[in-house]
Image (cartoon, one colour):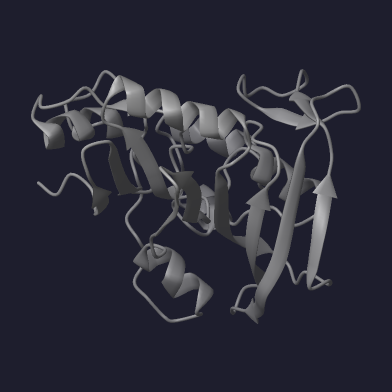
Length: 248
C-alpha cells in the first residue's frame, strides 16, 4: 500500500503530502487509518515521529514531522515564533470581486451550532487574520467559482474556512461552513443522500496546503505539493468522472 507521497526525508525531518480524507490522529480503524500511524509504518520503528502541526481531515497538502525529540522541539519553536509560512489554494463559491484582500475577523466557539467543533466570527474571539490573492475566476455549468491563494498570519482552528464563509465565499465541499451544517452531521453518521452529495459538489472541502517555508540550520527550506487530481480537474473546469466519496 502507498502510505503517502514522500516530499523530503533526512535525519531530522519527514515531509509528506497528506491525502484529503485522511485524519492526522489515531482512530479506531486499522494501522492505515491515520496519518501518524502511516508515518510510523514508514519509519519502521527507526524513529518516533512527532506531529508539530496538523491539517483538517479533508484538507490535503504539505505536512512536516520531527523524527527526533530535538527536531520536533525546534520545529515547534519556529511555529510559536511565527517563522513558518504556509500557503494554501482554495476553490470558493462565487466570483470574487477583488484581486486580493485581507480578512481580519476574530474567531471563537459557535455556541448556537449543532456541530460541537464549529467556530464562528465573534467580537470577543481570538484575533485572526488571513491574506488572500485571486488566482482566477471560472464558471462551470452549475455556478461561478474562484480559485484563491491564501496565507495565514494567525493559526486559529478552521480559520480559512470560517473567514471565507464570513466574506460570502465558502469553500466548495465544506460540510460545516458551506450551505448547511446538517451535511456534516449526515456525513459523520454515514447517511449522506445523493441529493446532499450534489449540494456539496465535491467529496472533500476544496482546500490544499500547497507550500511551506521555514528557516532550518541557517537555510530557508521550501516544500510544495500539487493539488490532488479531483481538485485540479474542478479548478481547470475539465470534465472528469465523479471522484469517490470518502467514508467517515
